[in-house]
Image (cartoon, rainbow, N blue to C red; front, side, top):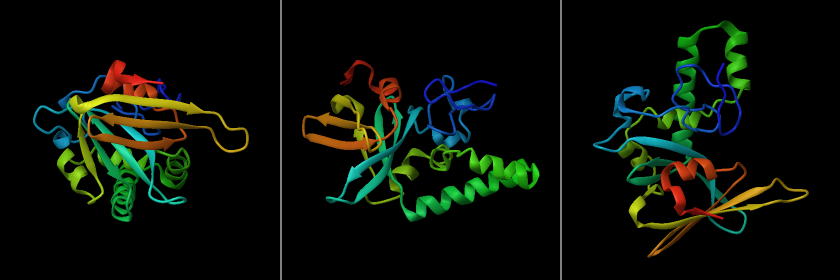
Length: 192
């Protein structure tokens, strides 16, 4: 069984993305995507960066997923609506798979990333329209992506990610290393 080069979790033979972290398991082309309309025009889905937390206030944070293509990065906020659609898709996937109670239980316990799975099945325009808080950045306008690691003794360690453009920046925090996924989209513009 192959393993994800990003998180080390097992991935299915024909999977285009790791169901745990969203890392591509092979080069993705139009024909390899789960649903053909995941490609819009000449945009091909390169990576999905999960669990980017954006501060809303001193204590409240919103969770975003970044869909990276070769020309833009779409930031999709995890909302109740997105969660319900993702859960429904996961239920349908498990029902089609079969395997009885224990097989379904094992799939749920293994923790597939249901948000990344759902985002792979909709168009980029649908993803952008899921919430009024969603936004896209043109990759050519992103000057630098700063990815800094912060080790903490008592709290979980975290990465601070800042997308810098000429007109400002967008800052996120995550507890899983996003550097490899970000480099798949931004290359040498990813710095520490």
